[in-house]
Each structure stands twice: as structure tokens, then as C-alpha cells.
Image (tube, rainbow over all chains, first blue to last red; front, side, top):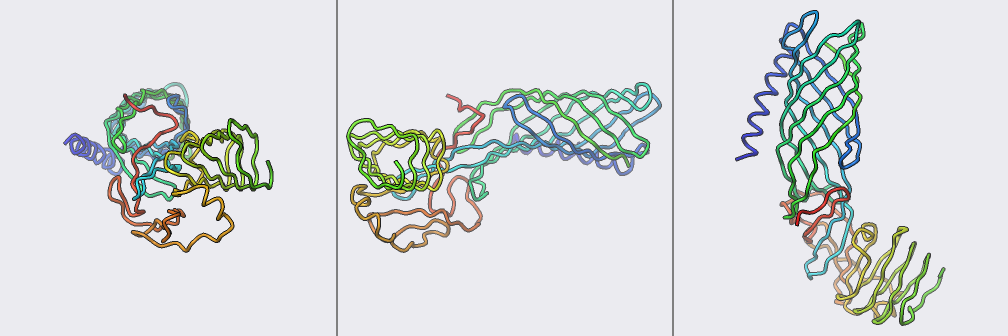
Length: 193
Length: 150
């Protein structure tokens, strides 16, 4: 039930973001970037599709869909048909899909300051060394973010900022694992259309 | 210990590196290994094989149930094979392994009672949550960066 509600809310907000990106008078943008999560201390990558709801000479309001992913290595324990256990390497994938709102304050020249927040789901899955998924989980995730953005005449945007991610514990193969809220630092580049 | 087949002596034996060897660890013996490459370890019930904190390559452990194996975090790159009698498997170490029989798709197991040999060959099939077509069942996961809740 919780997952269904999350998916429904996310789909609604995403559709608004995408329609704004397509139809909004101020246009939209696509952004890709990477960063570092301080907990658990790992790199991540992300992509955004953005739609601007309102924009004037001093401020812009945008909504966007953000997809952020990172991985963690794991040791898997298997039990064979004879009851004997053995171990293999595996990977845990974390994919955060969030719908976000952002306000952008235009500073001098091409520079602007942005801040906002969003919420969505974190998809967690464990796969073995053959990339077969063994189990998965989905949880609530939320984030607040801020940073600086530079607009270039060609439509290219570059931005650097930080985000704070609120995460729920996740469950795989019957065990629950503790996650900590995490601060993340990132840089990205995009193109306005 | 390089290029040698031997039986670990009773008591604790520490070896920094073992290369290209067949080693039998019987009950009452404790072999601690820092790095292993190209080895086959045969561990009897009551025998202890530990270490591998420096890593392992091309290493297989033939283990009886009840043998003490290294910590799970060091076993990720090591093939572990169940045998009913480690000492007999060691004596027959030069015999070619029996042909493997495919079982439930991906996993492969031998016909003989002595060996239950899992060769990690795998075809990609749809999975069924925790239990899937390799004929084995994943029972637990230990992430590197996340702790299990008590």
C-alpha cells in the first residue's frame, strides 16, 4: 500500500514536471552529474529532467524529476540443496527517484543560487555475481538541496551544490539494514531547451 | 609454502603465502593463511582454516560440514565445495573431477556422493524472489557499508 501511494504521487509529480518541460513557456533542462555521499562514503551519479514553472528577471520556479544511483558491495550466503552454505560476492543497487521543487534566485551576471526539496522512493535491490536480482525493497526518501548555478549563453548550465538525503532502513533477504541520513556534495552539467 | 602438497601439522600453523598447493587440514590443525593463489584446501570436520585477509585467487576449499572456514567477508572470491570426506578427497586430488550434472538450470552438481561441486556456470533466467533457478537459495546478505538491525 505504501509503495503504491508513493508510486502514484511520484507519477503525478513527474507528469507535471515533464509537461512543464515540454509545454512551459520558460522551457526545461536536462542535467547529469555526480557526487559523493558521506554516509556510507560512496560516489553516486544522477540525472534530472527539469521544467520551469515560472521565470522572470530575478527568480525562477522549477519542478524536476531526479534519479540518483549508487552501489554497495556485499557478501551473499547461499544454501545448497544439501543444506551446506557457501559465499559469493554480490552488489546492492540503490536508485532514488524523487520529484522536486526548486526556487532559483538570480544573482549578478550568469550566476544564480538555487534551493529546494523533494520526495520519492528509494529502490534497493541485491544481485549476485551473475547480475541476477535476488531480492528488492522500496522505501520512502526525501531530500533538501542548495547550490550555485552558472548559465552560459549557449544554453549550457553548470552547477555545484549539496543535498541532504533522508532515507528509510531497507530490508533484503529477511534482514533489515540501518541507513543513516546523508549529506552529499555534487557537481553537474546540463542543457536548457 | 610454494608448489607443495602437504598435510598441515597438528596445532596452529601460520603461513603468509601459499601458492599452487594442495593442503589437507585435519581435525586438530589450524592453518592461518594471509594470501592464497592456485590452491586447493581440504578441511576436515574440526579442522580450522582462517585468514585470507591479503586476498585469494583461484582458490577452492573442499570442506566437510563442521569444518571451520575463514570469515565470510574473505570468502567472497573463494569457491567452497562440500565433500563428505576431506581426507579422501585430498588423497584423490589428482583424479579428474567427475562430470558435472546440470540441476535446475544454472547450478551444476556431480553424480558422485563424494563431491557436490558447484561450478558457478549460470544461465540467466527469471528469478523468484529469494529462491531462484541455480538450485540454491540465498539466505543472507552482508553489505560492506550497512549494518544489520538487531
